[in-house]
Amino acid sequence: VEGYLRASEFSRDRVDDLAKHLKEGDTVQAMIINVDRKNRSINLSVKAKDLSEETEAMKQLRSENAAASAGATNLGALLRAKLDKDKGGSNPQQ
Image (cartoon, rainbow, N blue to C red; front, side, top):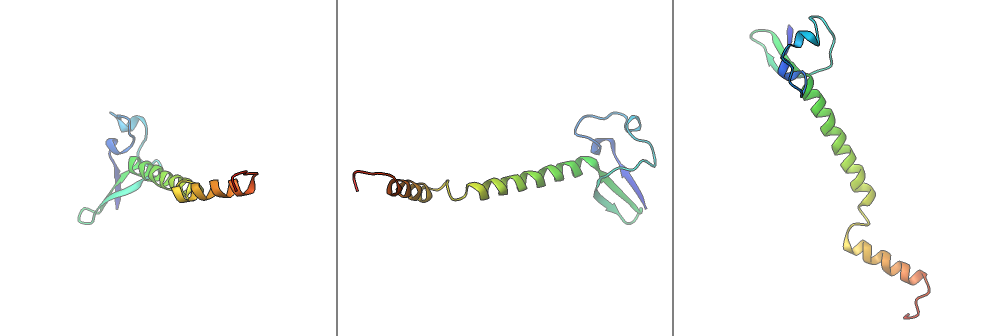
């Protein structure tokens, strides 16, 4: 089985000659994007691996932010917090 890394799948930036960045036999971390069983080859992508890692990091960041602010962003929670604050302080209207 042979793995192929096209220049267009190496980086988001334009790469004209991949030989300037890598040589045959170099070890790289990449994602498998296609398997050709007939020709016994796989196509690899460093760009897809990086994009996948960025997407996963963004999902994790969003879920952490959503969990941290879940109770304070809806109207009911804000009103309850305001009422609790008013009950705890000196409110002459009550």
